[in-house]
Image (cartoon, rainbow, N blue to C red; front, side):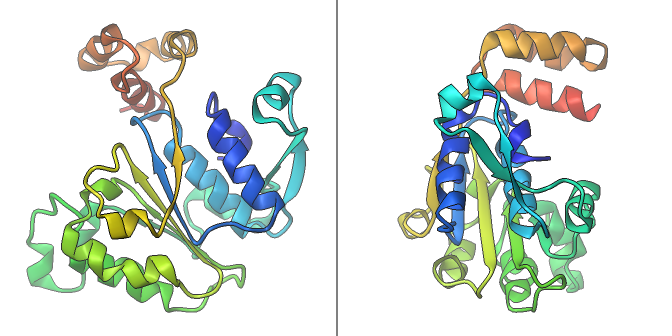
Length: 241
């Protein structure tokens, strides 16, 4: 869950460290790259750091120091109540936004919709309205949007003001595979951080560890190479899916 846990995304870790060390964290981040390479893990680690009661600097191994260019990385302590709540998925100031939330909308007619994309009703009720509420724990709020490239154009337009000028202490992290479906106005309001494919050697090692959990479909993805599908197969194996 920590920023330290993400493997082989040195550029992303370096970009976040620069922002954290200078106390200049953007209100809105856009994490883009293949599925299963650590975008959500990095986003959760950043949320932990932003909401932690006692963030600290952790010394990095020599190899990571060389790649990231700094001797230590600022991260959540991992021990306070906030860090534990994030790990358990129960922190009241961390909000996960995804298309299936339409099934939890208070409007019965809206709940009947299929939710193939993230529509304006989900964005308005679960994101925009909640940004206006006070932080429960007093250290701000973090909104993590999965599959943000599936936000409809209407929904993107509705959240432009929130992306540009969210309430104080509010941070948004959008996760996408590709930026192609995002409006230029959305892109211009986010700090983009690129995530790359994982080294084959690392994925093979992890796949071997999780071989017993792999389905036949995942084994086929594994055979195709490291174009992002391999990362998705690894992600599903680690989740036990």
